[in-house]
Length: 113
Length: 114
Image (cartoon, rainbow over all chains, first blue to last red; front, side):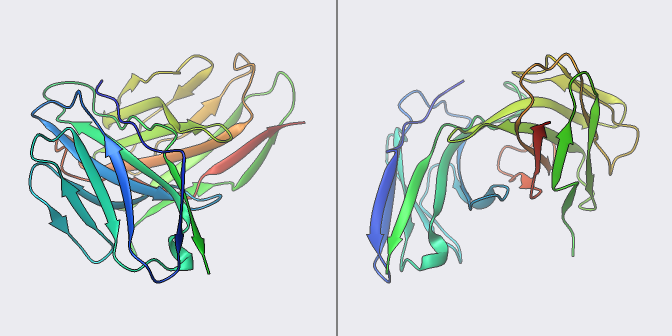
């Protein structure tokens, strides 16, 4: 399975934008890039996903490099509720492999008031 | 509201005892999954099921068993053969076969050894 690499931790000031990077240099053409976040003692929560083009939703934006070997999750205006562990995951179509999410250790985001 | 319900929230196991964790979903999803999370680690897949009466081993299936008799339910049994069961267990569901669809997670069951 293709792997992702994320920084272990990041800090950001409240009400400022946050850019969370993810490297996935072995990504294949059928892999979608998914982002989840996990608050303490809760299950992961889906944030956003994309294939090739940049994506926006009410929670965040996803910027995907042209060669797809890296991506960045953008929180436009961080709040204290955004403090969580953020996971960048590659999800392969079930026709090409196991239908599962492979979680790394993610990035622990701390928001400074 | 649709979602995934895991119970109990906390569970304690005695040595040599089997325990069963419950997972129910009302999202009408075909696929269901069980993950294990150890402190400071990511999630690891235990078992998954694409359809009723069928399930597949994940990366760490030893010492665990599952059943899928109903679409809505995917219980996980932690057997006495699992020598290090203390962990946070997460159940998830999704539409099967579309890698652009998210997995939806429950709030987990924290299992400890007495």
